[in-house]
Image (cartoon, rainbow, N blue to C red; front, side, top):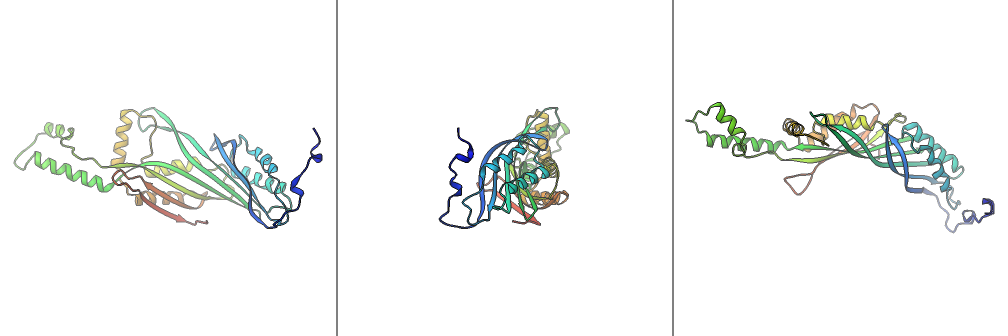
Length: 299
């Protein structure tokens, strides 16, 4: 095989239309890495600006090779910044900005509410980073599922149960304790139940320039604790009952959930700003209920 210098390089040929390009690179590169101490398989987008209007293109293979430094490594702020700087060094004279993003799903083992069971739950994420004028910008996109029970339906269900009680035990009747217990345990007595739905919190977070290990698990734990009704994995009947109790004692509209998450995110020091959205996938309506908020958000 001939040496590389003997092979044709069309990148050195003249170009027909000169001009600067904001982003040039590659998308959906497969890479094994680690996030929050756990192995993850990610799809990576890498790119740089092409500032020289007369240059035919960038050196894409150099970006791919520089990315190898993150293979099976923890995706923390310092490691990401180091690779972005390597991108710019590999494109000397061509680029002043570098970009990197990872997307995947972090699997975390989550315990049941009461029993010793546990199981794995996936949290879709995207980490985006850019380096411009020696300034690192880090953003974390994260999705967290939870359950929500409608306060309105809970009130209407309680009213329906009260009305049934009045019909079954009129004023002149004096039901004994056992009769009331049996009535409460029957489908005839408990004639209505509140409706609940699977719900989704989606957030984009601006992180401090050097957060160390990206705080994915801290954010997941904090949001699930704040909402009080995280989706479950493996359960026994005692867990299912505890989940029903948690929903019954933790009624919330989408506005309630959004305000809780907003307050929690503001208390996490590494979070410098955010945009968040909650969606309640209605079990009553054919449409969704949605609430959003922002704090120190930079598009």
